[in-house]
Length: 417
Ligand SMILES: C[S@@+](CC[C@H](N)C(=O)[O-])C[C@H]1O[C@@H](n2cnc3c(N)ncnc32)[C@H](O)[C@@H]1O
Figure 1: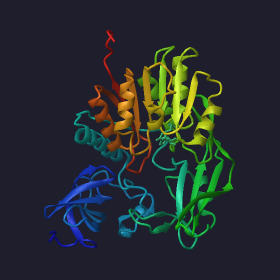
Figure 2: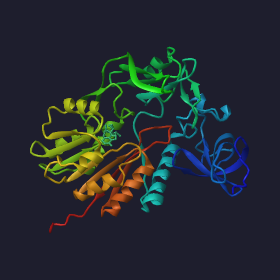
Figure 3: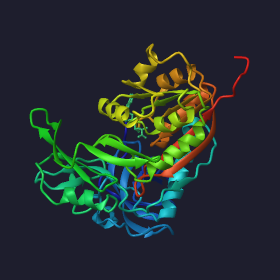
Figure 4: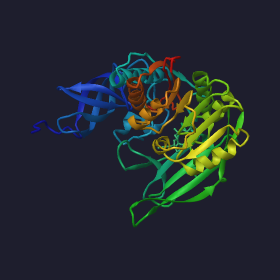
């Protein structure tokens, strides 16, 4: 039986330890672990407990800094200020850290996740992308409160804090969202594309089902957002997947190209292909005599990819979940030389890792936006006989805890095969 007191709502002074996955730092109080938001390693803070897991760990927000770390700054957004108590925007975890400190925190988290989850000692250094810490976000989904005001949710809560700005979001995008009222309790999606055209779609609540309907109404902009990367122009369905940071697509594609190094005339797979960004790079490497198979589950993305890559006949598309397509028969006869996979946040998982490994590609490039998922999948590939060659990591989401890592996994070629 748990006889520990419930600390929810209490304020405790703690010494803050290292950064943990998810934008917290770890502290201890009376033998219990407290995950503290908006603190920095080495600080002494007063934390208000927002969640007590009953005998296990607690979560809380730093509400007063008694001794600040050297990297602490005043958050540019008032919604991330400790003076607000625990009613802070849930979006930005590291606004109170300067840019260099954010890179150090993210580097330590990626390195630690690899060590803890995959048992691999491989120090990772996260690099900044050009463009600074503010106004980089080209895509956002905002909530709307009961009075029709757009906003963001409090961390781990349904409460919506109305916004008049969001300093990490591009100016025209945030202006399009904040300049009007919306249907109460709806959601608004916004995209600012490379031409600075803003696309806005409202998703309204279905009162019968008590959740936001998938049916949506375009309020501003066109069907497609135009983007540019790898020297090409891309048409992406206005709220379809495209990298959120404007410098990310080129940086990731260049890294994929370098790590993949697919032989001319070879075969490559681009799994979770989106609108075909990495498939285009692989297609250039294999040339007209090679083959690239792009697999993607969202039908609109496959449609966009097919149109975007119509000049690259060596790219073939399969529409459907990767786990199903890899289990099917229409993958083509040739085993891939190289596989690139860029799964959603939860990672690819054992079934997909085993299906890829069974085809014995020489090189695998794993692109991950979550360090824990990266470590899980890397560990699974290592179980299948691959070794971690290198990792390049980018801060494609400044001010938040998110970080993008690209890992190269290699298998020694056995020429007797
Ligand atoms: C992180 S995005 C990567 C897109 C692309 N590589 C890029 O950089 O633009 C992940 C993509 O995987 C797709 N996806 C999610 N789950 C999938 C699944 N089980 N099978 C295939 N595609 C999936 C999503 O629709 C999304 O386009």
